[in-house]
Length: 79
Image (cartoon, rainbow, N blue to C red):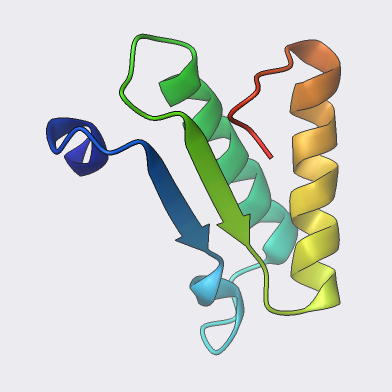
């Protein structure tokens, strides 16, 4: 919401909760991709969402979550 209120074109989501706080990577990835997909499903100033991973497990979880979305409804801003 804040990104859109400030007319931003891109936003980044680091998976910081999956590190020290131990949030499950697959669950975090699923939530992040689901919420980003909702935003890109309507009119928005955002054109790009960057999902950042700091280790291979989180990267794999994000990749798998994105693969599921791309197979259903590709969007150029998701990646």
